[in-house]
Picture 1 (cartoon, rainbow, N blue to C red):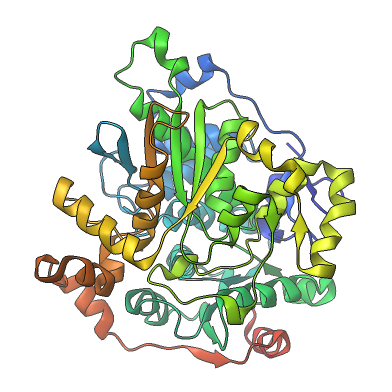
Picture 2 (spheres, rainbow, N blue to C red):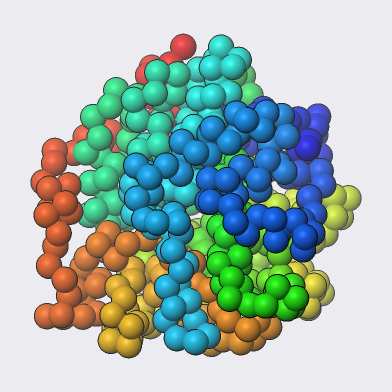
Length: 475
């Protein structure tokens, strides 16, 4: 398997190379030259696999330059009982006959990001050791990516993490998970801005090829295709589990919908690839909060990223994103490489990309539908799921539940909502929704919040972050 850039100026590269580089050297995002196909017979052979075994099988279709035995060892370590103590790693919870919750928050930081990041936490050091290199990971987080990356790489001798976060825009638990770490290879930088500003700084520094090479810079944001490959796994896992009780002759006819709370389009892009690989997915239901740029795109075909001033601070802060980096991969596929090279610069010039003439294909061919959720919607969803099922959900998952209910059975027999995080990470919003019925803060969370926090403050400046990185990078 070889990878190319959406911008068309990168020589084909293998998985191990793009795993370390993150962003393509021409400023584009890497995409596989060919999307692998998985037959119904192959899916059935995967049915009896454990989660680590399934991860090795799925990721192995993309990471063909890692020997099978080595990849199996990496996924076994990533998805060990220590990291994911819940039986099965990714449990499914039935909310009603047509709605299920896919439990993606059983990892060390209580968020879905752990499922991809724990794999990278094994795979990246493996490749570095094989090549005798070090890596300085530069990332941006709107909430959960940062802690997931830091917990995956903390204590590594050949990796340092420099994580940018928007000052004052994360929950108290999200901040505590990141800023309380004292490992010398972990660097937290709070930027005076919103997540999109942090993301722009990461892109600007990655775009400086000389600086990137001199400081051995890589990325583990969702722009890193290694994360996308690892996220594809739980789409297959969830479909296999939901069809366990279906007669074998009828399984291939079972189409399910997946609802994905989405800010940067990485998680749902993994679902798109799973669908292209042959997984019987009916609809990919994209859920946003009030920062509904992606919802507008999939409803109208017009993509208009918003400025930091127009990016709202909401009660589902990990989705407070108004410029979805991974959308570039999908638009490249939608338009085709040649048309993409003509049309994409329009976005850079005008801040707007009108693909309304392509809009019908978004649903008819690719299966996307979308919707937005408000704060009131989140509170109502948290209450109703707790009242009806006794299940606590976080506000981002509540966005997913809200939009999923509008599309139940729209193209699939059941709808699976991808969980985003544990409700405990967003105690204030859960308490607002449930009042006196809200669970008391756990001793684990109380202890976490009480730890001293360490963070470097920085202006919204790529130069300031570059200077800090150059002074603290591994050599």
